[in-house]
Image (cartoon, rainbow, N blue to C red; front, side, top):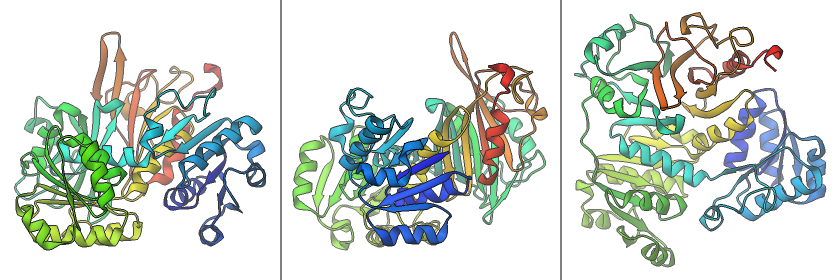
Length: 461
């Protein structure tokens, strides 16, 4: 595909790296020539310096025959105008825009070809706050990813000494939980991926990815680690877009406090939020944290725009007794450095956002793409089409499907007249047309092979 990316910041740069490695023709536009040169030194892409919404700049980038425009500058208005220009002057087939302001997002009829022609809206703040919300719903999980509109979830947990399944072969999973169906999609041991088999033994400290119906997640987690009690008290450091949105999601079910440094923003938050306590001050102020009973806090969330401030306030909160600490980190190089020490979970907004963007770039009928393990692995939800003559998956049992190396099918969601059915993928399950198939890839370099596997032969059309 020929794709033009507007904005060479964290999201645009990460997206360019991901897409360039998949043999796409990529051009990146930004006003910052230093950022563009840095990108071009690392990957094989075209770059254009200039204002992203100007028609002459878009022509220089090749908009006239582009398949897709991805507008992810830090300015909502520039992103929206660029999509309008691409549609009105060049009839660009697919236009994706990052829009952050809730004032725009709350207007449901604003984004259409008749008004502002954006095909796909991406809101990193919404994606990140939803992601954190799922982590809070499942105490003890390292990652929680939704498929089939939340009916199926892929969860990563750290196996603990004393878990019923730790030290056991996976084949005994059904004996431990006869009423719950689940499948282990991957095991990471000391950072290396293992494809699970019946004889695989889970060891303490393994990072285990398993897939199950949403209602069964807690039961499976209890087999791998001591179940943590539900969270009640939450402190959020940073009242920006992510912090305020998350507080609004949480405040009806949890006791929530926000610490915000800016007085005007504090006043605004006090008016927006109904049940959240808004505190003026610094999250790195030890006296303030002690005053607010940090030692009784279940989750401390550092969600400011400053990585270093987030890391320092998180470490302080953990030292002062916070039960669980989650930290927003934009710099990908920091994520591996800090996670697993005093910081329990490092959250990368780029990784969360990239998956959503990749869903619309990939070939095949992809519904969801989740980027995992700092982009090395992926989980994909793809719809199977065709019949046994035109498709390499439809009409075949899972054991007979020629999956690429390091890929496994975790579950299938099948629609019926009476509703949807979650089918955990065992060898004898046969894929039907229209099934939502959830595939786990320990190495994303085989994504193209999965795309080809689900493409339908010409006779189907």
